[in-house]
Image (tube, rainbow, N blue to C red; front, side, top):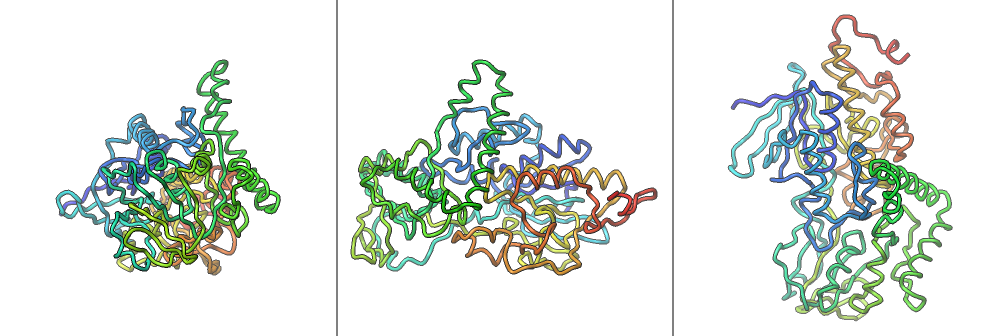
Length: 497
């Protein structure tokens, strides 16, 4: 079967993939590229999740693209607005017509003889096999399984006579008006679902094993709204982005430097939102801030739902599901018509695609990542992986810009192949997400690349340092190897100098 050939193939048409494509079109205009997307629309995560109230858990000024700043006043935007933003960006930068929809990639093999990748996939509409080849491969697939979310083995779940659903497979026609709902979970999805469903449901109970830090932030940026009266809109939203990035970085650094102080401040905010008579054990985590991600809510919406009586929070463990709800270890029974299992994600890399080099399978969990962008020992491949302690796209964008720098450097000096090689045994036991103690990270640790002992194999999770290194440091550093240079190409020492 004939293959379609490109200079660069990008896997995934979500925020990371569209961002990478836009950067490629701007900074490497001579490259012929395409985007391979399993779904039938752009958006990735923001097209997949359709549950009530779905929204970002990062402010949109820093979550949006640097080259096309978010220009709305809603700080935590809803899913449809984000999906539209991604689609409009793709259209504006001329990359929408480069997307191949409905292709589920199964295998990617690097051939050293031909210096190219061969990818095999399935057309989800027809079931036919599709083939692609490229010189350079960029994975923008995120880190979780889009096919199925994580569902623990709940005892007695088969006996429940109501409807049990996972947010990742939300039914479009679900009617919950006047129903009793139990949401199992305490993460970003749960704290979004509870106030959204409480508006119409008879009652919503959020059942959690342990509490999470919840931080209320303003739903609308009133400062930017005020500044728009006097300054050009472009300036206003650039300033909002800069301001929020600095604020987030400050909060993270202070939380890690003085965790006790920030813990007290976060809990004080919860107390203020819920009132003095609320049982704070439901919002007092056993861990320190940023050992797991914080949950942001707009204008105290979760707290207001709890104060109104339309929702409650229960901290307990499940004994068993029953015909009409959940029996807890304490003996309390939660009646339910609908149970929502907001129990998290299954981690997956490369969208489940098998990666090979000269036919030999690549074991991702045994690999390091170079500058958190390139896969150790895998030629001509980048892995766009965002932050877990800050808005994802901050890292995804500078990683894409680094890849563009690398591609231009290879073209300039006639290098057809680049590969990062660890010759010093830098692998450690932790994964690239090991800084977080979240349950989904612990469950998926065995599928992720390793964390390194030292840079450039160690993940920094520091936007300022990452931006400086990826955007300004020399491409050639003695660790990143290049092959097949044409006459006149510099050696590594000259390039580093």
